[in-house]
Amino acid sequence: MNPLTIKPTKTPPKAREVQPKILGAEGTPQSDRAVQAFPTSSNYLKPMSQESNSRQMSKFLRQVVLLVAFALFSAVGYSQTTVNLADQCNCEVLSGTAVTAPGATSPTGADTGDIYVNTNTGTIYFWNGSSWELTSTDTNTTNVTFAVVGADLVVTDSDGNSVSVALADIAAQVDTDDQTAAEVTYDNTTSGLGATDVQAAIDEINGLAGNVSLVDNGDGTYDFTDAAGNVTTITDTSISTLTDDGGGTYSYTDEAGNVQQILT
Image (cartoon, rainbow, N blue to C red; front, side):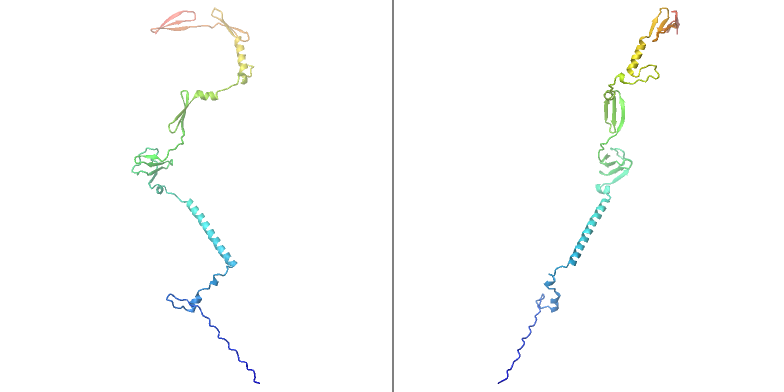
């Protein structure tokens, strides 16, 4: 019997790895190193880690904060901007105290549209080519005079406008009193009357006056009777007259009726 012979099986040859070639501009293959310089698509498909997300968010927030801070700084800077009047109106701005009212023609030499500021009053004028005029009309006026003219109260403002009100109309509003004399108190401290209101005082005086009499006795004397009934005879009733007769002559009559001529 022949012995069994086992032949070894041949190992198939190992397949050679073929590296991809990248053609250059001229169609020539580039080196393998050039191929390795390009990252594979798997590098771009890797998911971002949580740490990477945090860094991106932090960077975004810093940018937002810087943007807001810049906007605030710009706003503050704008509010502090000084505006030059001459730059705004493209004119020359003069100042002083020479121009005090519209229509002034001095100082001269200004161009139409130039501005003049009165440093005492702050009033602004403009040159219209021949005179300085107000840039705007001030509608606020002040009262200059307040006086009684005839039967009216007259008020005149700083523009020369006058308004008058009849004094009688004013009196009708303020001089009205509907009190009666009996409602008005009366101070009798020094009068000797017993009344304590005006009406009672009037009545008391009228009563006393009704009891007073003066009687001519016909002999040059008079009897005076007071309120208490006391009678007083008045004997000093001397009466003299002086009459102008004209022509420089006067007639003087004494108490006894004697007439004397006085020549001047």
